[in-house]
Each structure stands twice: as C-alpha cells, then as structure tokens.
Image (cartoon, one colour):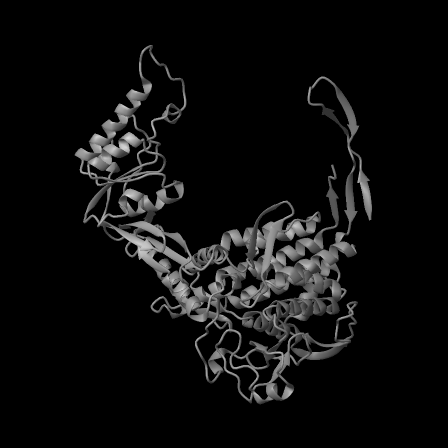
Length: 614
C-alpha cells in the first residue's frame, strides 16, 4: 500500500537569476510492507540468481558496462558486481551496502553473504513464517552456529600450522581458484597461491617490537607474459627511467633521500600564503638556485639515490645525473610508504631548508630487471624489511586486472590468520555440516510430531516435513522467543535450507549436490551419475573440501531432500582422511554469516519505505 507524505514547495531560478517561479514539490511515497510486493520479491529472486551464478570456481562470468559506452568489465567478483548494481528499491540497496561493507573489511566471502541473506528472506516467505518469528529464530540459530564454530571440537574448523606452509597455500589457492575470470590452469593456480603466501610471509616482520607493523606488497602487472613467469622479490620494484635502462647496477650500501614536496620549481608549490616579490627579482632563477643548492648538499652528503614523489626540475635532474646519482621522479603517493619502510628515510616536505641528516636512508644495492617490455629498478633492502614486490603476468588486460584483485584479496585473507589462526572447510562442506548440526540440535526427538507444510512455490518438491521436538533447544527456544514450536522449527528448516542452497550454488554444469550421512560433507556429482553410481561409491572421488574419499559404505542424501537427522561425526573418525585442499577464511566467513543473518533480519523487519521521488 502506498501513501503520500505532504511536502512544501520549492523555488526554481532560471539561468539569468532575474525571475523565479514556484513549483509544487511532489509528495514522498510511503510503501507499506515492501516484501509483500511481487515486484520486490522478483527483484530479490533475480539478484539471488545473478550472484549465485557467480559463486565458485566454475561460476559464470558477468560483463559490466553502461548504456552510454565506456569500458566493459568482465568479472565474477562481488565487490565489482555489487557496485555495478543499481535499483530503485531501498531493500536491494540495504543488502548491497551491507555486503560491500563486509568485503571492504574482510576482503572475501561477499558472494556467500549476499546469497545466504537473499535465501534467508526467500525461505522465510516460502514457509509462511511470520517476519517477527523468523527474525527471533534466525538470531538464535546464528548464535548456535557461531558458538559451534568457536568450539574446540568443531567439525569444520581447521587449525593453521604456521610451521608449515601447506595449509596457508591451500587457503590462498582457494581464494585464487574461486575466480574463473583469472582463467588459470591447475599449475598456474598453484603457482599464484605459493607466490601469495611467500609475499605474505615477507611482509611479516621477524623481530619487530610491539605493536607489530606489517609491511607492504607492491604489485607490478605485466601484460602479455605467461602466468608462470610471475614472481615475488624482496625489496621494491620501480619503473626505471629510460636513461637507466643500461645501468649495470650499483653496489651498496646506497644512501637515499626521499622528497614528498614538488621539486618542479613552480611558485604554486611553495605553499599557502601571500608571496611578496620585489621589482626586478627573477623568481624562477631564485627558486632554481635553491633547488641546485639542495642538489649540491645531496652530492656532498654521499647520496646515490634521489627519489621524488612529484616532479623534479629538468635542470636539477641533469645536475644530479652528472654527479652520478640515480634520479627517480613521479613515484606517486602510493609508493611513498613502502619506500619509507624499505629505506628508513624520512620524506623531506620542503625545499626551504637544508636536508636534515636524520632524513637519509639507505638500500643494500640497486639493479635492473626486465619483465617483458617493462624495465624495473630493483631496490634491495639493506637489512630486515617487510616490503616486497609481486610481479603478476597474464595474457591480456582483463585477466590481469582480475588476477591483481584476487591476489590483493588473498593477501587480506592471509593477514586475517594472524588474528585468528584457523580456517573453515571449503567447497560447501562447512555450509552442509552447519545445516546438519542445526537440524540435529532442533530435531533431537523425545516427542515426535508431524508438521505439514505446502509451499506456495510451484517448484517445491515436498508436501510434508517430519519434525522432532528437541528436548535441548526447541522448548527452551519457543519459551524464550515467544513463538510456537511450529514457527521455530519451520524457521530452523528455512535456515538450514538457506545454508544448503549456498553450497548448491557451487554447481553450475547441471550436476547434483549430495551430502554424506556420516560427516555431513558436500559432494558434487556430474550430470550423468545414476543412483547405482551413487550407491556404489564411484560417483565422486572427493568431497568439496578434499578431506574425504568416497566409498561403498557411505550413505547419501540429495541436498534439498528429506533425510533422517544425524549428528555429524568428527573428521578424526574418517578413514582414509586427507589434508583438506579447499579452505575458507575463518574470520571472513564467520563475519559473512553474521552479516547475512543480520541483514536478512533487517530486511524482514522493514515495515515502511518512504521515498523522495523528486
């Protein structure tokens, strides 16, 4: 239902500002119960299908462009896709903003959060659960899940061993391989995963005093070269000026000075305030004299590397080069912090005073490296430093841009492990295991009763669901939440089906998703698999995370179908047991779970939407 909110008038002035006219302002539109609108539900469903089709290593790519031309971006990354989505519906804007905020803080699991949020809203409506009851139940089930994930005996949490790089490489490789736009073969994906871990370890200082300050990884993209030529180097790579391309190298230690102030000699660069110029004074000559005085001091103090964030006057450049200095200008503000960390120099912010002795730094030596058509100046650290450079190579610009973005996400995810040194099983196994755990908690039966539920969706393949009363959770939950057992158990089933639907989104080639009834891991089956293959244990070699192997003794159930509740067995009971090959960030996924549930509750709690249509 829509209503008009009375508003005042506004004044419009024409271009000459000589006349004015009053135009009545259109009233704001107030919409009651936005989720009851079929248009809103259709757009939420479309958004779920769009984002779900981008989820996982075999996802379908999307091309983002506008109607008036410009560049076309090919991606399956949540941060790029959500920024490109525009909608007049505030509900969609709310979901978009929540997920983008999560991604900006944690760098990963944006699609997981978005798909789960949209599924929770959809499943609550499909099962006829009241909004208030669903909100209270979802909050309780979220606490149940997060509490389980923090437990020592959690079946889907893996402790990361920093004495071995295997689990870190698996974590980084999962992030890299989840983005199909990178178009990486198996050896290329493994190579980039190892490089990401090496770059991460180089940015962690060994003997730094508290508080620990992490270093920086500077990415150097090289288009047109094979991915396997990508490499990581300690120190910093800078674009080499043409006159340095033939440099054989400079042995160190090499004294360095950094300028954050412009050395172009322009009056506008002298700072704010009034400048008084006496008659007959040549200001350009005076400024140039001052610049040359700085150059003479640098030469006398033994400087061999002269770096400026901005522009250096050509005369000063010529003077310094004649003195045997390596001169680099226009490095930009983004490289100043790594340069400070690498050299230990303090940037000089003015040209009005002499260079203080404390401002100088040093590097061990300087060399030239060639990567395809690029010539780079390699600054080697003089001692223990936490700065490194990652050279990323790929065949074209689109793949290279996506690979650069993915490596930044991998670095972010690896840094999160320093705070919480765990990972979660990937490949959909955490989602299916959590769903089985929640069902077991709310269905453990002492009193059995049947709830008949007929979905309003024409695609629903179930007419009834057998639900058990939990002697541990259901009675306590219904009394605490102020809802009936029927509402709570229906909301719990909606929660579990939402988790399972995220796992099912990993399959995009017409196959089926199943769960084993022992450990509750997720398995993906090809489209041509029959029931005989499933029962014979030959349907899938490994589960989604790669920790379990298929065998004839396993019992299976298709996702989104009925099965008896069970308590997932710990991985330690599995035989044979493999090292998980697919891992997700613990910090990012736990926060994404919270964001998904809390955002879904916000959407379900929206009663009115007031829009200014002017």
